[in-house]
Image (spheres, rainbow, N blue to C red):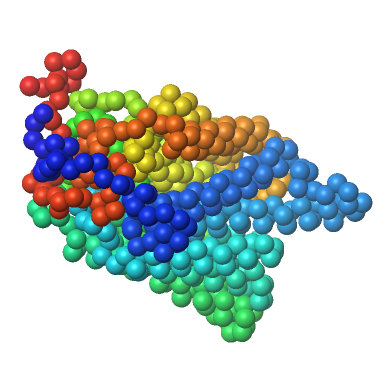
Amino acid sequence: MATTTVEGVEHGHGHAHEVDFYKESHGLKSWLFTLDHKRIGIMYLVGTLTAFMIAGILALIFRAELLTPQIDLLVNAANPNFQEAASLGRDLYNKLFTLHGALMVFVFIIPVVPAALGNFFLPLMLGAKDVAFPRLNLLSFYIWVLGTAILAVAVLAGQLDTGWTFYTPYSTTKGVGPVVLANLGAFVLGFSSILTGVNFIVTVHKMRAPGMTWNRMPLFIWALYATAVIQVLATPVLAITLLLLVAENVFNIGIFNPAMGGDPVLFQHFFWFYSHPAVYIMILPAFGIISEVISVHAKKHIFGYKAIALSSVAIAIISFLVWGHHMFVSGQSEFAGALFSFLTFAVAVPTAIKVFSWIATLYGGSITLNTPMLYGLMFLFTFTIGGLTGLFLGALSTDVQLHDSYFVVAHFHYVMMGGNVIALLAALHHWYPKMFGRMYNETHGKIGAALVMIGFNLTFFSQFMMGSRGMARRYAEYQPEFQPYHIASTIGAFILGLGLFFTLFYLVRGLFKGKKVGANPWGAVSLEWATQSPPIMHNFHDTPHVDSDPYNFPEIDHSRATGGHH
Ligand code: CU1
């Protein structure tokens, strides 16, 4: 064993195994009124994963519809008027993809890593007892519940068919109804996001353990910090935009409605001023996860620590300057188009720095191909495809061809699912023993990862192919020549669904049947591993002291490995 950065790790100071935070108190009330960041994190995890499951099932339904060029599955066969039945089927299709998008984006992807895993691990990794404002943390959770409930009512009321982006002018023609409700739901959810961001920023500034300088902070924390900055600065813009849309629908003011002198493109400017940075709210925490997972399971000091940390901040800043790439074909000026195109390409630089650093970390590492690492490697593959295809959409000339085609759908899912969700899966396996004190079944993990890998790529790579050949997004019906791609995509979606349900199954099973683990089953160095699994109520017996960065693994013995040096 070489250096240990943490005093009191494992060798401990004679503390017996104490009751963990699950057993600290009992009953529903002890959860609903808890101020413990770990319990709040677990509640977020259950809530966001439930939303993920529902939104995923919706996707399977409309993927099944897309097996054939005609609309059939969503058509009520009992209706004697076929034209009317088909029309209702198309409406239903529109609603299904709207709900899929709105649930996935607002209820699942935006909060899942920061609010669920961030809540659980930020204080632990900083060596703190909790977040800076535990009551505000609980309030954020209930605001999330309220926002989700409002969105659910909007959904159950039916007629929500604008797509998750609520684009004008269509969305201004709906009057008082589900669109207004959905806007209010997303508005409320935004406040949850803002308050979590504020909480995390203060926690990072004020609650770091003695000796933990900014340059010794885990990269997951750097990523959460950059994310929090975007949450605080960008989300209010979305909130105001949604309120304007509500006002437009309720009072007919003429802000976005061209018939009344409004400007529908104005909505797109406002919307993407938030929603592009929001893409980084979704992906930056995933980057943080990958830095942790790759270095721990390669047992190697992260390559380019400062470059990775600062590139998160650079991405956060540049993310505010690229929103116009969503409007290349909305009639904005050519100069604006060229400018936004250039700035969009600029994001590739800090992103590539990260990918380069992760690969350099793997080089010469002592790599264990366990489930977290498999998902880490999968991330490098899928996210890189997502990033590189983004260049075709960021380029003015090719975007004109690809805009509103399945190429965009595929790109978005390679970034969001191939990025965020794959990283989430890496994190759920990497931190599973810490969160639950038990280990999942590694064989099950590998089977699940294989199904996810095959299913995901089959689903979305065929969408790149059909999109570049002209298949437009958001239609229930299509030209017969696209059918083979759709069949491949649908089969992929069901394999992916199978892999995810299987993953849910063995992760839940592991809670009861998994082998019990000690404080630090992976031999990691960051502080969350310096306390028992699951952690005690206030995380640490004694405040930990930090004297190096959290990637200081013992030297790798390269006598067996190639590519190393002595
Ligand atoms: Cu964007």
